[in-house]
Image (cartoon, rainbow, N blue to C red; front, top):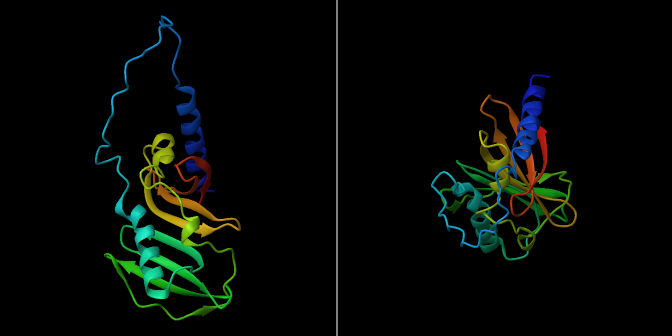
Length: 185
């Protein structure tokens, strides 16, 4: 129950942000034909390196093992990226850590793995946009990690976030950052 207020707060915040749309009050109805200013993202708007590390880690595994690997999951945070390769017809997994740009030796194979898998070709999120929905809808939350999971038809992207009051959220996003669901953890 301790995390329910955080979700309720997040839902209220999202609703409040949606209600803060533009107003017609004072509008002359004139159409603005000026070119919009092209803004460079500020350092705070750029994706953290771990968002790109997913692609780098997958490339490193594909280089080491050969192209066309199946994966159960890839999870990246500021410290390292874990890559779980499906082996033995997706009944076992071998975990690799990608640390400071280097693929580490594999962990021992873990039997009994189940779940959907994905391939490198299924991972298509835009690193520059994948955090944009969370930043817009939950601007005081900090994204701590990104995970990619097999979903039966490709890949699903989940952002782990911490709210400013310490609650934890799993946020499923689309490839361009569209927030699809928010779940307290």
